Image (tube, rainbow over all chains, first blue to last red; front, side, top):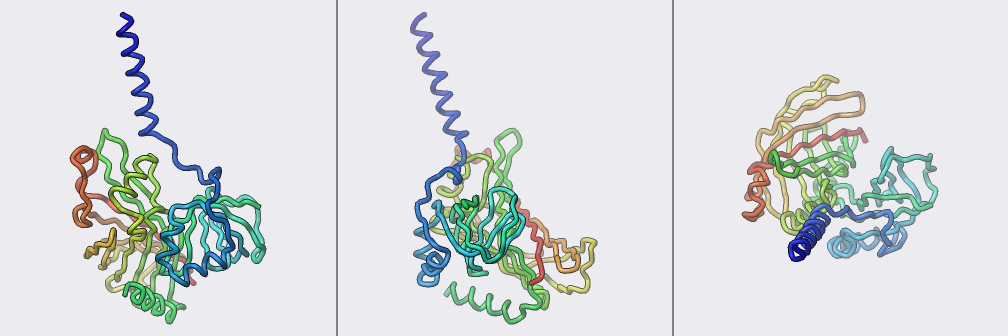
Length: 126
Length: 181
């Protein structure tokens, strides 16, 4: 009897672990610590020097970027005309073009068509 | 070489900038769900698309890491085992809308056909006669359409264990709300 109970407990625990593994949560970029923190100018400069290497360096990493706002849309902000950030949620407050801002998000790649850096799951830090 | 092509395309668009319509938040979804199994579906809502209305040339670029799945583990497997997105971070399409004429576009959807080539995971595949729906509202052109691809066309091997859970043909939907620049 005791044996069966312990087997059952192990089994339930196993199912629990498997379930947690299969249905694990997505990364939460908002609460992740940024691996890199730099200005939009410095970031873009790395891409003008060597886009392939820079892309490898930042791909899928959480980064913090500071730069002047050059374009604002309902769910995106562009810094310095070169860093395009898609926001986590719709923009709540009104932002002023030209004002510096710090954004944290996940680097997803370099857009050769527009020559822009793309960041997703962004949140505004200040 | 690739860079030169992009540059040429870019300059081309720049030269006709008054005819350029673009979006940076275009949506591309692919779906390979089998009923009764977990949904295999992902969407990129940060796809760049540019349409040159002087000749109907269209270019689109999605960053593979930008495709989001409902299931985090599925997203991880997609990136690591199937799309190999660390090595091939981009997927793009370049083509032409056949007999494109901006004057034919109204607020009512018009059907047209699209030819072009799709690059994914470093493999290029020609797409022919893809049905696209276009409509226009002042300075906004809406382009949407769908096509089918198979994993083998892009050299992606689906392991036996998940083969039953993924459809043979993967449906790709795109929807671009292009704004005049």
